[in-house]
Image 1: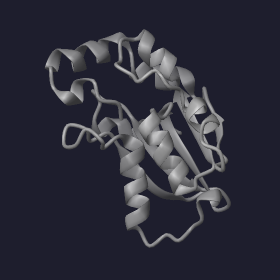
Image 2: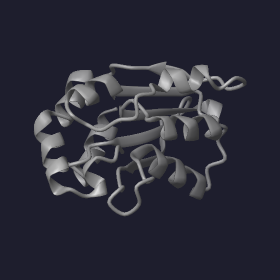
Image 3: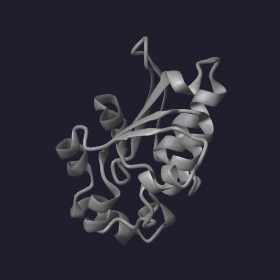
Amino acid sequence: MRRAIALTRQCPDLPFGCVIVHRDRGEIVAEGWNKSSVNPLWHGEIDALNRLAESSSRDAGSRLILYTTAEPCPMCQTAILWSGIETVVFGTSIRFLQEQGWRQIDILAEEVIRRSPGWACTLIGGVLEDECNALFTRRNAAACASRGSRSGYTRR
């Protein structure tokens, strides 16, 4: 999670960092950060999943753990399920982001999983929560919103 937090320096106004780690080796196999100013779909998780797909890694998703600074949005959680990754660890919750003024689709990652029969995924929330929450203070949300661009409200 600390590496995911460090990756937010790449886009401090949209501090959604993500790393994918091999469960057995403890090795980072892919990482990403929010690039939604280029493409509104390019959230941190999507960036990391794309990098994983482009890599030579042939690790099964069940052997991987995805760490992200914030709870995955419905789009990202769905992509995580399709990738076969069965464990997701996040810091900040969607509820906290909403409280801080971040525009969010009001569907939690747990609901996406619950409504996806045939997939298995364990969510572990609140990891380094205080450090992750600090990335998403009202000051950051206000700065993003004042820019008036898609990247001002797009998550990850």
